Structure formats: C-alpha cells, structure tokens
Image (cartoon, rainbow, N blue to C red):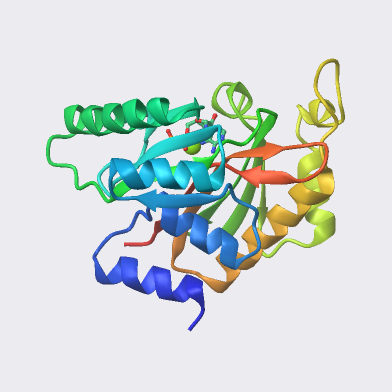
Amino acid sequence: MSKTTEIITKVQSEKRTALLETEAKMICEDYDIPVTKFKLAKNEQEAIEFAQEIGYPIVLKIVSPDIIHKSDAGGVKVNLKTEEEVKNAYNQILKNAKNYSQNAEIKGILVQEMAPQSTEVIIGSVKDPTFGQTVMFGLGGVFVELLKDVTFRLAPVAEYDALEMIKELKAYPLLKGFRNNPTVDIDSLVNIILKTSNLIMEHSEIKEADLNPVMAYEKGAKTVDARIILEA
Ligand code: ADP
Ligand code: MG
C-alpha cells in the first residue's frame, strides 16, 4: 500500500474528511511535492528540540482536527528566532486554540522551517460533480480572494497545459519579474501542478486539495501550508 493510501485509509477509519496539515504534507512528500521541513511536538520541550534540529527561524502551528483555518484561531506564529520565543509562542497557541474552541482535540504543535518570503502562489484541486477532478492555479493573497484571478483545467493535465495555466493568469507578468517582483522558477510550479494532477487522478476520494501558499523562488518552490479534504 502506498504511503498516501495508508494515510487516507486511516483518516477515513476515523470518520474524518479533513486531513491534518501533517497528513497532507506527508502525502505531498509521497508525490515529490516540496514542503517545508516539519515535526510534530507533543510538549514544550520537544518543540524546543525540534526547533534546534530544523534550525531557526521557525514557525509553530496548531494541529487539531477541529481547527481547519489555523490563523483564524491564532494558531500560527511565524519567524520565531529563540528558545524563549518558541516557549512563549507554544503556550500562546494552545491558549488561543482553547479560546477559539473549548473542546478542540489538540494533536500537538507543528514545528516547521520558516520559508523565506517570496511570491506566493496557490495550487489546488476541486472535484466537480459532473466533470470530475480539476486542477487550479493562482497567485496568492488578493489575486485569488479579491480578483478571482485563477485558472482551472480538467485533470489529468500535461506539461503544456500546466504551462498554459500559468501564462493565462492576468498576474502572470508578476511571475516574470515585474518591478520589484523577482522572476520565479516557472518549471518548478509546472512540476507541482503535474504532481497535484497525478495525486488527484490516483485518488478519486480527494474532494479538494489546497497548497496555499506555495512560495515561488527564483530557483525552486516550497509548499508552506497544505489542506486536503476527502469526500464524505
Ligand atoms: P492557515 O491557512 O490554516 O490559516 P497557514 O499554515 O497557511 O495557516 O499559515 C498562515 C500564513 O502564515 C501563511 O499564509 C504564510 O504566509 C505564513 N506561513 C505559514 N507557515 C509558514 C512557513 N513555514 N514559512 C513561512 N511562512 C509561513
Ligand atoms: Mg494556508
């Protein structure tokens, strides 16, 4: 059984449809989609150890099946640079989570590599009830939320389609290095689109996937947050 099938089977057996960030990122790794290094800490001491292991600066995030949008719950603390900051953030996140949802089940706190700021893109998928799996690409932030500047294709997509998806965005000039924006590595974005297409073609039980954001660099790209929702 593949790692991905193993994870999905476990989630289904627990009658969940939303994967934890750890589960979604393990699936990304299984499909060679680059993600930030991560380790799940069960207590403050582990968080400090893992921070050292991964290397500062780091990010801490809440991991709970009851909290899907982590920042809404005060569950994300970025750019932590010292042991002291890790301790404080660890406890603050737990407190925020309890305030947000009294009975939330907490699996732990995710310690992860802080990806340097860059152009943020979104790569995702939606299963259309009529047409089946579709792949989505857009630029992060206001481009998706406000301007709805996103493109879709029916999966499976070929390399040519993936490139076309990127090029047809209104904001495409930004990816080509407009004004202050650095030129980004289009090939690595094409690659992630293709891997996402493979994933959803091989797993029809995936209803939605959302790599949001993916940091796009002059060389390479890295997935900072991943969400996967299964069909009920
Ligand atoms: P959610 O979408 O559940 O609120 P995210 O994991 O996307 O939580 O975190 C919120 C924001 O924090 C991201 O959009 C990103 O800007 C920033 N962020 C999260 N993780 C990292 C990371 N590892 N490196 C750099 N920035 C991060
Ligand atoms: Mg996110």
